[in-house]
Image (cartoon, rainbow, N blue to C red; front, side):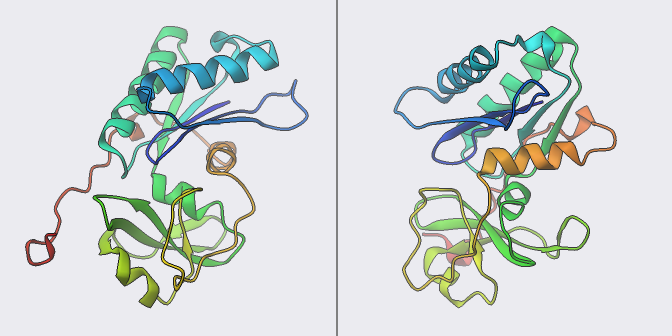
Length: 204
C-alpha cells in the first residue's frame, strides 16, 4: 500500500509491504514544487523496497482541507498511479489523518489555512475515529481556549498556551493504518475537500 500526503507544510509518502519489516516513510520539505517532491518521495520508498508501482495493491491519499496546491498535486499523483496501473484508490480527510495519529480518545485535529487561521474538527475514537462536528475555521488565538487537546501536522508551530495532544505515529503511518482498516476502497472518495468560506465577520 502506498500513502500520499501533501496538504500541509511538508510532503509525506509511506509504503507498507509484506517484504518490509516496518512501513517505509519519507518526508520532504523544500521550495521545490510539491508534485516533484511527491514523485521523489515515491521513487525513494519504492526503490528502497525494490518494488514498482505496479506491484502495489492500494493507493491512499489525503483529500484536504489544507494547502490548495498540495491537495491538487496529491490527488493528481494518486489518480495517475491508480489509472496507470489499474490500482484501487481511496481518499481520506487530512483532519481524520491527524486525529488518527493520536494516542488520546478525543482530540481536535487542525490543518493550517490562511496565515493565522486553522481548519479544525473534533474527533473521538470509538472502534475507529469519528468526527463529532463539522469542520470549523478558527483563528490561531482561539486554539488555546479549545477544550480538546490539539493534534497538528509535524513542524507546525502553535502558540505555547495550546494544549497539544500526544501522538504515536507520523501522518503517513496514520494514513496507512486507515487504509488497512478499509473493507472496500472507494475511488469516489478521492475528491478535493476545500474549506474556503471564511466567516465574513472574521475576515483578516
